[in-house]
Each structure stands twice: as C-alpha cells, then as structure tokens.
Amino acid sequence: MALNISRKFAALFRVSIVTRTLRISIRLLPVLIMMDLGYLIGIWPDWDLYAEGPIQRSSFIRSYEFERHHHSDWPRLRWNPVPIETVPRGMIRALIVAEDAHFYSHQGVDIDALKKAMEYNLSEKRLVYGASTISQQTVKNVFLNPSRNPLRKWHELVLTIGMERNLSKKRILEHYINVAEFDRGIYGVDAAARYYWGIPASQLSDRQAIELAATLPAPVDHNPKTRTKSFNKRVKKIRRYF
Image (cartoon, rainbow, N blue to C red):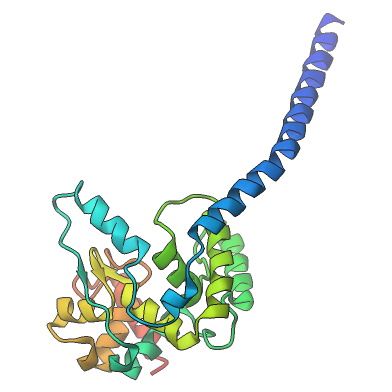
C-alpha cells in the first residue's frame, strides 16, 4: 500500500513539474520572440550595399581571419573577388548543377528538394542532405557565422527571403562565387583557380570548373589536391550534365 502511494505521489510530482515548466515556457515565449526579432533587426543588412558595388567581406571570411590567430598552422587568407562577367559560363553551370539545379526557378528555398532530402534523411535515420539552395548558402556565408546555433536556420530563412526580394539572381550568384570556400582559407573562385592551377578564374576550363564545384560539400577534405574517392565520385556526377 505504501509503495503504491509513493508511486502515485511521484507521478503527480512529475506531472506538476511538467505543467509548471510548460507554464513558464509559455510566459517566456513572447519575450524570446521579441529578443529574436531584435537580433534580426540588428543584423538586417542594408540591401543597397549588397545589390551593387564591391563584394563585401563575408562573415565566414572575418571569422576565418579571427580564428587564424589561434591556429598557427592555418594558411593565410586568399580572397580576390571578381566580377561575375569575368567568370566562365562553365564555372557558373558547374556550381548550379552541383549545388542548386532549380536556382533560377525558386524564391530562395527549393521546397521539392527539401522534401526529397527529408525523406532520404528519414530513410537513412541520419542527417545526410540539407537541401540548402545557393541563396541560403550565400546568406549563411555572408551574414551569419559557422556556429551550430539552433536558431541559425531560422535566421538564414528570413534573410534569404529578404535577399531574394532585394537582389537579382545574377547578383546573388556574384556574391556566392566570391565567398564560397574551396579549401581552408581559400574563398571565391578566383582565389581557388590561382591556388590549384595558378590561373585566374577567367581561364578556368570546364574540367577545372567541375572540380571546383565538386569541392563544395567539404572543401577542406575533398578537393583537387586531396582527390579523395568521394571527390572523384562527385566530379563524375557533375560531369554527366555537361
């Protein structure tokens, strides 16, 4: 009898704790929403600054420069932004094929690709694909940081919608090709072309463009120098569309 009473009391205590926690969470929710809105207002870009003119130094580049002070083995930053008009069409095509086949038809988020990625991840019972578009990756690189903050995806989505409404597709691509990472400390296609082959981006062949595009999922580990099995497999996959 005493044991049953003890169990009932413990169950009631657990329910009480859960109820109290829910009440506190509900009360705090408006405060948290207001705080997050304040954060978004604080980081909201001056879109005119990004719609034209020089390519701005990205958040990831600034983060790399800061972190390099704590990693003496990291190479110096290589970054040389160039106009999109000087980049071969093959390079643009390779990036779109590799990263976002529906770039020109979506408004920042590819719903179909997202559904397929979720279905695949559920079938594999692990996170394999994220289905981030070029627009989302550009926002992440330019405005956010490498941290795994759970709110980052939400901030990325809001900023992506803002960017799509204020920048042309061509301008979004221009930012992307100049801030994407192609190895540790190597940012943008021009710096990558000079690092791997000693040529400017304007001289990239289709083969070289495909290899650069193939590095993007994990550029530090899989690139034209490491030539891992995963890298070579991705090169073959992209080449099928050329």
